[in-house]
Length: 234
Image 1 (tube, rainbow, N blue to C red):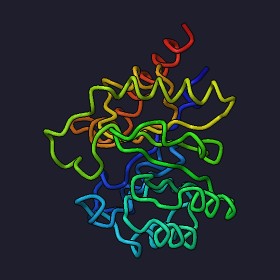
Image 2: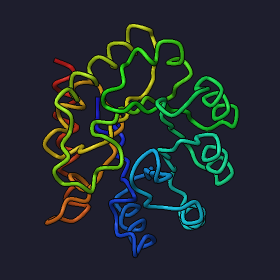
Image 3: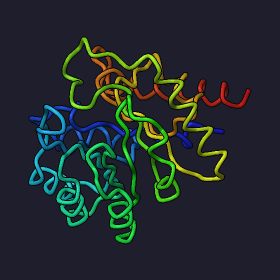
């Protein structure tokens, strides 16, 4: 295994929001190909970092893949908006979706990767019938939208939940990606990768960690990924 099998997806909401183009250029310089973008309606989650208009402008200035995470009570509206913009993956929450199957198929028929996101306390049982339709399952490791609260910590069962999902995917003969989001820090990356995570949403506790450059933090992340992959093989 190698570190390329695990993707680092920088969360743009953790970058310099007053200088978004500069931030994207810094990320591109490090050879990172995918940008994680949170779309939040202010109701499902108490935050609203980027509007649709801003995401449209971002699409004009970079060829990076857009990994969009929708946190909304009206998923279909935002899914259609993101499809119009031209993104590469859309993940939405099962907790706010009445017609999960329909929305996953809507995304996939537009040749965009489809993902389902689960809040920390949401059971993996919710995936029973729709897992084959998911290119990615995103496990939230802290309650979404509360990242600005420095006292909000990653849930204690984060590693176990990733392990359980990895086993479920393998037992069913699928190749579904496991994306992890929420305090994916430099310290916990080896454990999360060992447990089966292969997409890491990188934020203020990893790639954008203060005191070091993005380049320096990326090296540390890659070291953690390699450690995790070695542990997974054992």
